[in-house]
Length: 232
Image 1 (cartoon, rainbow, N blue to C red):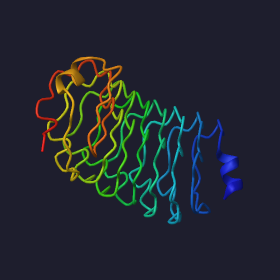
Image 2 (cartoon, helix red, strand yellow):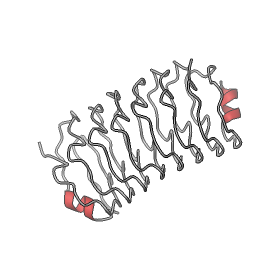
Image 3 (cartoon, helix red, strand yellow):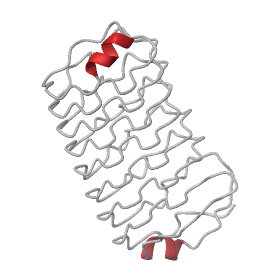
């Protein structure tokens, strides 16, 4: 599988992907910088039930427009999705329940710089009950205009939201209940008004257990946020 990965990584003239049944543990950087990759077939990772790491798998695939619903449906052991779609800046939409069949834990920088996304499905992270990190997950998604209230509703133990939506310039509101299902019992020590009304270039908002440093830094258009963080 290492030979296959070496062949795929950096390929720049790939318009359609083949079945990857031979891959087992990791597909890190498998399609990194495949600049001509515009779509992915169904059942792409069929037979890859042992894969645990999809880190940077489609990193820099800046011509990729959409994703198949079953992209990770055959990878129940997959836990790492850091940088998976980093800089897929032509990606216009995401399917719901994209990671529902996995054991996802780490979504750090997963969709960072996906600047063509304007909205997110409410069930994007459905079933991700073991997820812990969303650090920079949607950083620099500059055209994202809204967030679904139930986006993290299944992510009960998520504790790291540092820079999650930093530089989402078109984001205007944040649902007050977006963290309601998080089971982490912590007090949020920061000024909500300052967090949303300024660029927050030096912000460091940290709780005892939930981290949201620079979570919405430079979201200059946000106007409402009351009730987002309740002191317990």
